[in-house]
Amino acid sequence: MSPLRSTQAAEEEPLKKARGGTPLKVIAPTSWIVLAVGLIITVVATLSMESVLDRVAKLDFDVQCNEIRSIIKNRIDDHARILMSGAGFFDADEGVTREEWRIFTQRQKVEKQLPGIQGIGFSLLIPRAELPRHIQEIRSQGFPEYNVRPGGDRETYSSIIYLEPFSGRNLRAFGYDMFSEPVRRKAMEQARDTDAATLSGKVVLVQETDEEVQAGTLMYVPVYRKGMPIETVEQRRAAIYGWVYSPYRMTDLMRGILGGHNLGKSEYLHLQVFDGAPSRENLLYGNISAGNGSPRFSRQIPMDFNGHRWTLRFSQMGGGFMAVEYIPVWLSLTGGSIIAFLLFFLVRALQNTRNEAMRIADELTIELRESEVKHRLLIENSHDIIYMLNAEGVFTFVSPAWTALLGHPLTEVVGQSFKRFVHAEDIPACLVWLKKVIEMGQRQEGIEYRVRHADGAWYWHTSSAVPLRDETGSVVGFEGTARDITERKKAEEALRQAGERLTLAVRAGGVGIWDYDVVNNTLIWDDQMYRLYGITAKTFGGAYEAWQAGVHPEDRRSGDEELQRALRGEKEFDTEFRVLWPDRKSVV
Image 1 (spheres, rainbow, N blue to C red):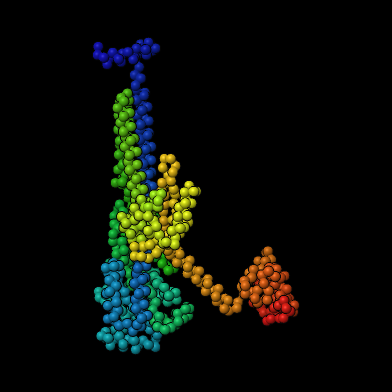
Image 2 (image 1 turned 45 degrees about the horizontal axis):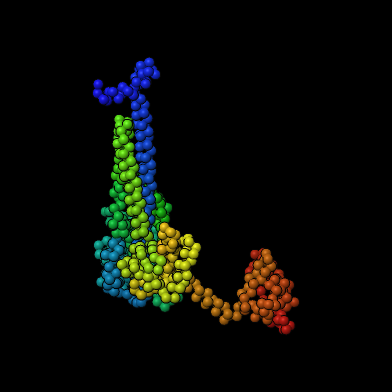
């Protein structure tokens, strides 16, 4: 008898005795349990991995949507700046010629810098009485067939007299009266009244032919007559001279903006742009057809430009469990099932335990590697500076955001003291703050200081940091983040200066300022009020009765009635009364 059969016989012998000599295969139930458990774990792990990949894919989808929205918004802002520079050209010289306009637009290099733009033009506002003279003037410039169209008798006309490049489709726009079309006119009037760049609603451009017709929109920037005031809407309407504008064929525009994004492929994003609320009538651009099925992910993001809203609808088609990125899920399902069946046949083998341990170790290694990659990408793509200092204040690490914000190469920062880059006046406060970080032993925020840019300019930053400790608990450095707040500081300084100017204006005008708390019967006066009543803050009671005591007895009743009417909302408190000074002399 072989040793294997001897061992098996030895194991079955007690069972034979217990069951009347019938042998039992004890391994079979255990194997089935192992197989069932293995398959369940595989399914749960597969579903869990599929859920994680779904979340990651959704996060990636959202990131791409936000990125594309920012790209479109920035490009529209760039177009507005180009048109505003054109309006500035007319501000400098109202008599801009056709040749000067051509040279100006060529030097903008729009087709290279901002691909997708149809052109840059100027539309002149023409009162009805000046229309014949205008037509004759343009014809004398070498355009004998020129006319303002569409025809008809109107109070006011406009005409596209300059549009570069002055060729191809753009020739069809020469002489067109955009003010005669309601959608264009609404945008032109809004630009005129607000003195800001304005987008029109959806239109069909006059540049369109019978082939490849695209939805269109236009951007307008007003041009006012030199020397005329434009502080109010009425003044701007009286001063309007014309509009610098750009027509956009939306498909061409979006291809120019998003040329680097593979929109339209099944594994990438699809984008639709609507003028206002999403509807078929409002569709400006779309690279997805109705037959592509239900989207895997979808999102709508509004994009506002000076009061005009576009809605961006993103969708990702296909994908799901059959997408390429789900290969690990299928591998997990297949691999788990194979392992379960191997365990079924080799349940007594120690090798299975070793293989399972190795599989788990591999998964943990992958997760650790993915975590490290995500952490690195977070640091490299953060708009805030992430830094580390040793205990002496020397940089041991700075993220790439430092170079993006301040221009210094990272090799010129690491190994240097932070004092080299911080304004000398702010270094003491930074040292006190770092000491506080050590003393508190937790994250501290709020320190503001100036940092030198590579070009020599000073930028304001705010920082937060936590102490770094070794195994003994001793502080060995700091880890923190820094954010650029230069624009906020500029705004605060502008607000402070405006407040100072207001204070000076109030003092110069001899105007007193007061505040009455009706509920608590409390009056708060500024220094000018005390001077007007001939008293001081020490002698003023601060209540309504104290004010009445300073009013001439003959005027107290009328003053009180005026105040009560104001409190009831019937009128503003605006009355005249005499003030009785402490020396008993009345002052009007």
